[in-house]
Length: 136
Length: 436
Image 1 (spheres, chains in turn cyan, orange):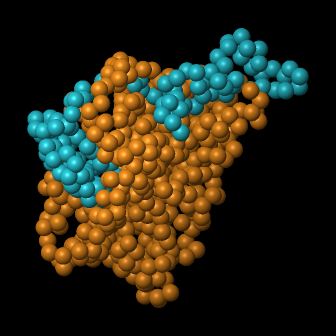
Image 2 (image 1 turned 135 degrees about the vertical axis):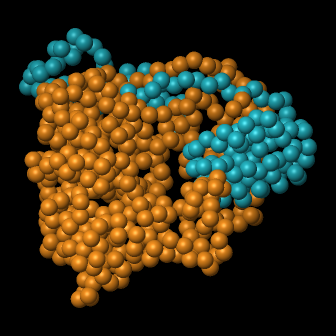
Image 3 (image 1 turned 60 degrees about the vertical axis):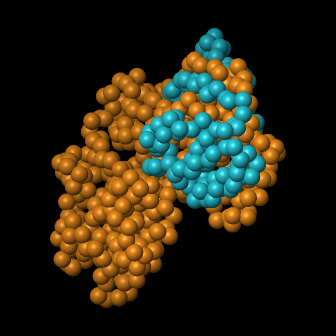
């Protein structure tokens, strides 16, 4: 599934919902249909059981440098097995193909979904980019 | 953080990565993908992955990464603001058959037929509580996602769908108030359990006798099912590839492990009293973990006339992950025998199990859960993990981090002295009475 279709599943596009005749929000039509038995077909009105999702606050992405020359890139593992070995090979790739880049490996503290404020502060102070490996 | 980043995710989690980034405000995040899995590969195999293509885009992976970090941002990527998310209109109108199909096809069900939550049925369900229809009950997330919120009316719709009677509804609301979803996004295919205590067990005719864990009573069956439907509908859980990633899934997720404690047949205080409630209070307690196994598979079975359930349990637990602890589900015959062995309190049993269920440090370090969840804690100095990771490989350590890792509940019909045990950890106990 492409990104556009995936994002539509979040309900970000009203067009997706409008595509279903069941979701047509026409009050008159609903009143007419509610409990009606036209043409021998009984129609029911049932509740939408879904909870309320929070709104999405868009976060502008960080500006990109024109190149990575001379930059320090943090290679961060979230702790899933294999991430360290993978990032090590990426470090080797940079040494071979972009030798002006410095790489720094770090294992993020805490569970895979936890913040690591100490590490993120270090990256902000000393790094110019991050590659974060997320399992498995 | 304000630093250019290139998330690197294995291909199996493509949809999850894109959707979760969007939910957190970056719908255009530049995610790069590797083949899946990367663990267990040799350095040479990993090198081939690094030098090969991104399996999603087909472009060279390292070029993708460098581009993700250097290509100037598009207008979409610079956007800020707030985007509302719709779950559709408050009601749907159609024939009963079409509505059944609609609820099923839109992921509102557990793929079994439901009771349609008509306005009349939902109104009737809400008569089971004194709380107002629009009262916010809580927030729920099926993992590391922004949580959804919900009110009494929305919870009532899932209770109707599950087949609950109105008098069961306070239990559903108590569960919903915890915000704990019974469908969790982990690849581990987690299972969930609840213990119901108090006079409500008899009032609602829960089954805690023969077949206590089976499909033999309406409250046991429907309240457990309701938890799963609420997890889907109120917390947006259970969407494979998005909010659910269990590789095999778990059959227990259909209605979870519902245990009404056989309080009168227990030689110990009821579970909720242990947790600080009065015996006459109605309480539901929730657990999470990996599943339930039968005690018969352990050494020291009841074929032995001098059966020792403490040793049997200890043997059974040697395959458990200490991370989740153990919930012993003891038939009253098992509980009585344990008391005869000298365990006149639960704490004595837990202390014995803690001291006698052991492992070597080498075995401990080889466990997946130790590496994933406890090693990071050890690095932060948290005990006992920090100490365990400093010990030599041949040192013997407890299998579970503390005596409180164990719990026991009594249920069953006394047709045989068979226990079961869940690799399940205690979460929380909440009042049912509060939701009446």
